[in-house]
Length: 122
Image 1 (cartoon, rainbow, N blue to C red):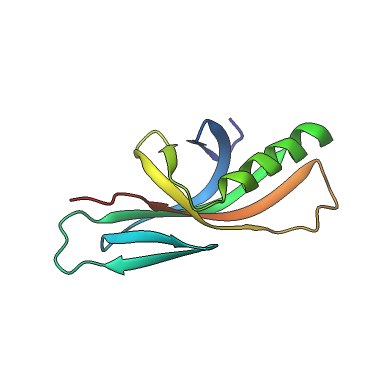
Image 2 (image 1 turned 180 degrees about the vertical axis):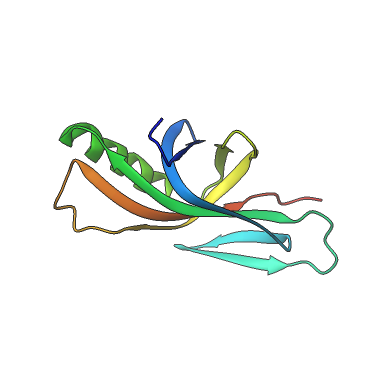
């Protein structure tokens, strides 16, 4: 564990995130439309969804860091995957993933990420 970071696991991919923000939002039905995620709010829907966002970092040897980055980018396909951070466990989608670099330092990749809970039934 790196000091200041929380470890989460998303589809068996360990991630180090800091400044985690967890917010309950009105529950929605989600649909993948090409490369976009659409959300349809359901009035009076009982379950609320979690939205979780934070800042992450990938650092390792050049090869391992690049491999980890590519694995994370592959999970940004709007498909639901298992998520666990020690407090919340469920099925989530990576809604946004932005790397804050130009891939110029393959030992260190910083990114921002937003997960949206995926629950399609009450």
